[in-house]
Structure formats: C-alpha cells, structure tokens
Length: 298
Image 1: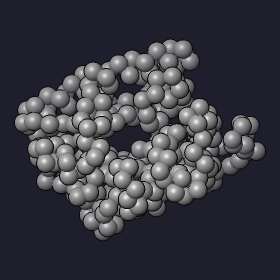
Image 2 (image 1 turned 135 degrees about the vertical axis):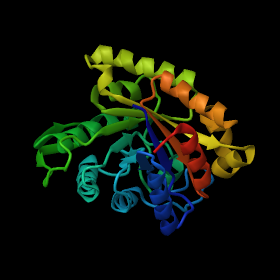
Image 3 (image 1 turned 90 degrees about the vertical axis):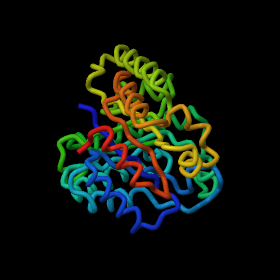
Image 4 (image 1 turned 30 degrees about the vertical axis):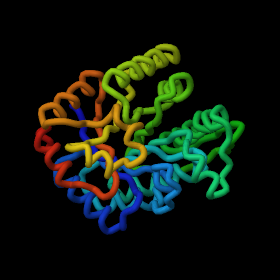
C-alpha cells in the first residue's frame, strides 16, 4: 500500500504556523510528515531564517498522534551520530513509537562555512556517512555497540532507555549511484530521493537493487520513496521554490487533477512505496487538501 506524506521545510515560518500546518496535514489523512536538516534556508540565497531540525522533530512528535514522524535527512557532518541516535530515541518515546530517521552526506557548503563546520571532499563525506549509519544502526537496533572507524569510535556503547520501536527505521537520502545507493543497499531500511522524474526514479531504484544483489540483501527490505513538488499553477512553483524551480521541475506534480493523479501513479508504477509532497512556506494547505481528495487519501 502506497504511503502519502508531506515533507515540510523549516524555513521562513514561525513555529506556531508550522505546528498548525502539521495538525491540518494529519487531519487530511496523510501518513507521514518529515522535517529537514538545515541551518540556512535551503534555497542557496544565504537567507538564514530556518528552524533547527532535532528540536523541530521533537515538536512534530508531540503535535501529532498518528503520522510517522520522519527526517529527510540529517547531515552526518552536523552531529555525532551517537548523539543523534540518543536524540532520535528520545523523540521515539515522545511520539509513542512513530519516529523514523534519515541520514545523508550533506551538501550545503554555504551553511557549513557560515557555522565553521568543516566541509570535506565528497569522498570524505561519503565515508563519514557510511560510518555514521553503522553507528546509528548499532545504537538504535542493538543492545551494545563497538565500532572502530576513521571518523567515529564507540566502545561497548549503550543507548538506554531503548527506543519504543524494536528497530527505528533508518533512511538514506540521495541519488548518488556509486556510493549513496550502495550504502543504502547495505545498511538502510528505506531510501529517499527528491525531484526526479518517474523514469529516473525507476532507473535509480534499479541501481539500488543491483547494489542489493552485490551485498546479498533482499531489495524488498528497503522502502523506496520520492519527494515531489506540487504546483496547481506556474505561480505556485515560483512561490514555493524561487530560484530552485528549474532544479526541482522534473519532479513536480503539475496540470489538471487527473494529470497529477496519473503522474503519482507513474511513480508508484516505477516502484515508489511512498510519495511525499515537498513543500515550504508559505504553505498552501488548501492545495494539499485538493490533492488528498483527488488521491482518495484518508
């Protein structure tokens, strides 16, 4: 069964408005809401108005009662993964066992530089991701964890109290075919990629499955999700994404209700277990409700 979610950006919005938006999305019948992890607005303009992810993730857990509370995705360069595991465990308790956690290599050098966080080469960031997800898996899924990596080391580390869930789902975000998808194949419970066409999604999913074969993993164990934009008009696209509109365009639902429903169907046919509407302030809840009704959500 396909899950429909909303990935709600944390930029340029007061917390009370964001919280009200979450509650309305849950009332519409969506099954997932997620946060992102940025210190600056994710539009490369240098605008610094953006809420912090871990604290907002906790608020999401407390403000909802039914949806899965996800993160797409935490940057491995911003927090030690053991500290992140502890925070996510706490959020799992706050949510009553509804939390998911996503992790990625990070990409916005603008905010790394602004906050004085080292922004190493792609290879190093991917190496950090591969180590970091193993640390997360150990602390979230096992009673004790010992890990000897280049960037992270743990010694009989315990994470107590244990999460409410026996295994908090761990997501990898990104579409890199040589490293990201291979890391997802080996260690992730779910994989997410944003703003690509149904055909490209199908192709990358096939790459993921080939990596699964290489590492001896059943591809059915990995949930696959796409983040897409929603635009009932060209003006919607400009308001939502500004200077990034050309980048996101291949993965934006556009047109009539039937055309949008058909495009969602193409993603599902391409292997998407989950379709998330990626949106950012000013939020248009009415547009989401129109989509929910067209898809028969709820």
